[in-house]
Length: 381
Image 1 (cartoon, one colour):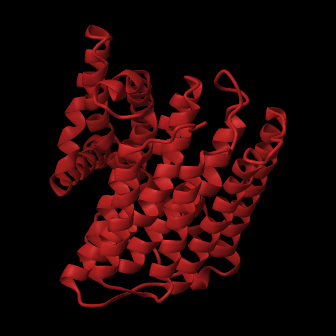
Image 2 (cartoon, one colour):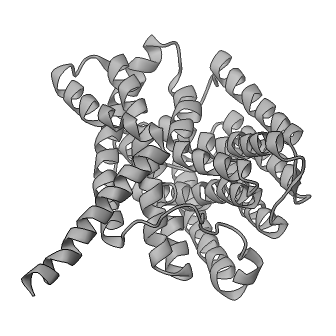
């Protein structure tokens, strides 16, 4: 009896070890996890080496984002469609959310807004364009779920309009008091969260048959044990919070030394690093002729940021940080988000993808990135 009782625990231990080993072999980027203890140690030994801390923290966030994404997917796969969809919606962009919370606590609203705008533009142009391009190089024409693409694009367009309104009222001849912008942003944040919750109800419950083909599990991937997934989810979240705090504390000085503005760092660097894990999944799915999944990841993640992450940060800012944050972005960021949303809508409207469509999206992203690097906004706040 004693031996038989020991077998399940041993098997469970072996399966957990095998899961981790298989994941490292499947994703070589996870080897970068060694930079996590390195950056924590460096922060204690060389607290004034801001440029070094910034560069190492950026590298350390990449494997943490990958582990966070995989653990979230594994837990969601075990909890059913409704709960799993809610979990993915809540934790799908947890890396960006944790980084933004750290910046919010430090009062760096410009970095927060730049990372939010950059994440939306990066997902709709760089991730979607890269999936079209890489998938198109291997497959002549690829098809995807046009209904889901239109749905996510409409949600994203609604969110960009909500962000546009507070920015517009600041440009009128007699701009209102700052308290008006705060009240407006607070009301819009609540509205966007309600709209997103109803959108999840629509896609996960009342009309989920329209979205059935999106985000199906990869048959070649072995599911993680639920216990291991939950432990990793908690542990990695704490590590992301620690590394994000180091990143935020060093980004301002490091950006000056590297000739970059905090707006460029947030718009490009933070967005690319935070979306690294999702990009890997989207690009590999496109190469496997699963462009349907790639489009769902790219547009769905952008919609999550615009309708969930940004409003949550506005609400949280009333309790964290020196002052409340508004949805008032600088004109350049608003313009880029609207153009990116329109471009993604046009590219995904036909339900088919080819490599040159990816080239056009990537070129538009490069135009935005180069412009922001060479000519940062004169009045970003």
